[in-house]
Length: 112
Image 1 (cartoon, rainbow, N blue to C red):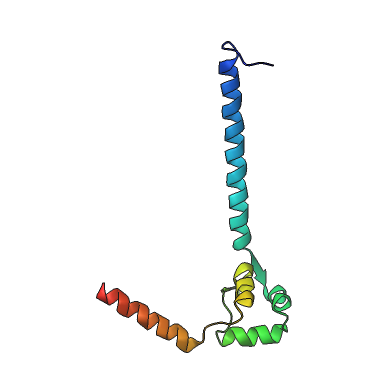
Image 2: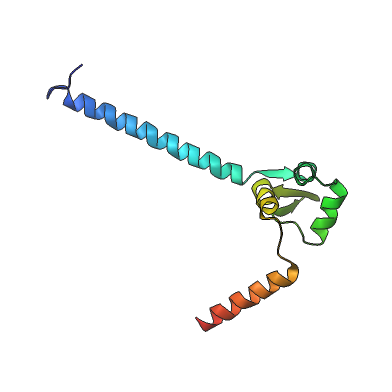
């Protein structure tokens, strides 16, 4: 159907609806990806992801060697994406490096 001056308002309305639907789809996709980044897993899934025993994960957690840990009701939960990033990074900063970074950050903030 060819667009004429008489059908133009209807076509514009249809375009607005299509654009609105596209925006909603994009926003939903963005929200879903943000939720994926916030996915918590239990210690068994974390152990499987890290290819470690559950006991080793508990030990590493107690030494502060694992990132993204949350404790609720006596159970440990881990941010899945944080553990994936940790694996991909190949190493974690030592407690001394973290302290040095914090002190450097504090001294920079005091100068400002």
